[in-house]
Amino acid sequence: MTDEPLDLDSHRGMSEKKAVDLRRALAEAESHARELRERQAVLEAHLLANAADSWPEAAAKARYLLNIYAASLSEQDTRHRELIAAVLADFSRLSGEG
Image (tube, rainbow, N blue to C red; front, top):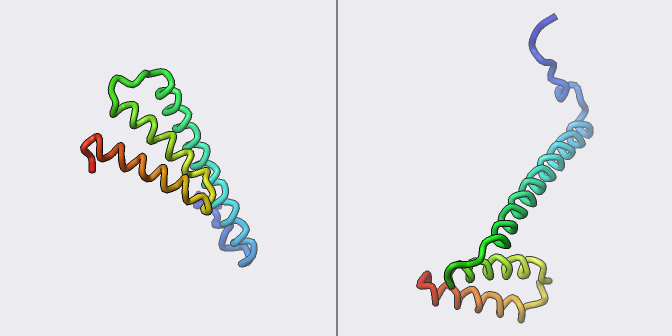
């Protein structure tokens, strides 16, 4: 008996290896998605708890919300996408970023 771990993947057939790889990738993606949701919840709690002290801070909150809204739009909703892009460009221009 050895202390070396047994490589079970080397004993699997091609279809079993693909199934295992798929399960591992799915588990990793779900873990990343859960971590992202947790970070978003922390950020949103911070945004709710703290009033903006300046127009740039208020614009940063609005950018966040506009980006969430834009992500939910269908590809065909070009009018709203263009309006969001114009507002974000205005924020950049008025804040001296662009």
